[in-house]
Amino acid sequence: MFQTRPIFTSLALGALSLALPVAMADGHGAHSHHHAHAATAGTDIMGDDGRPVGTLRMADGPHGLIIRVEIGAGGLSPGWHGLHLHQTADCSDPGSYTRSGGHVGKKPGGHGLMNPDGIEAGDLPNIWAAADGSAGYETVTAQTSVTDLKDADGSALIIHAGRDDHISQPIGNAGARVACAAIR
Image (cartoon, rainbow, N blue to C red; front, side):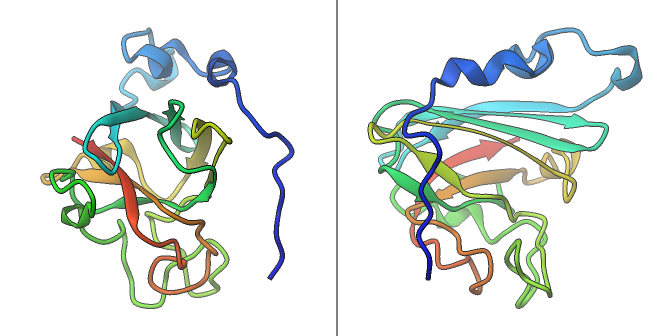
């Protein structure tokens, strides 16, 4: 097994806001005339003690769902963490967050971005937390949308204690659920 080292050791969260539309940054900005009905979502990310540690912002774009996570100092343990979309908008059980259910698009043997039999719609790249526990993250996925995630029982973004190896079943060996954001 190889170890990776990030190119950066800390991340200024403010730098992440440079390229996103105003609608993504604050949820209230104008949309272009081409995407007048683009769905958005924003919510707090709750830590393992049930208190807010950061924010989740999402917006449907013409080529996929843009996901932005910002975690404040002390929000995560330093290093890599698995990040997945789960089936239910329920973060009411801090310390385990199992009420959020399984991954969106769960299929037996299908987990992992490197899995030839995958991927599941809830699979996402890992997030890196700096030495102070803060993190900034932005990714895009064409596997789901805000509209799909805001179904009858909603969905959740879950951050795991360890990194996702993108192949092990069923969750990439990512460990316990340490943060949760309910998407409604």
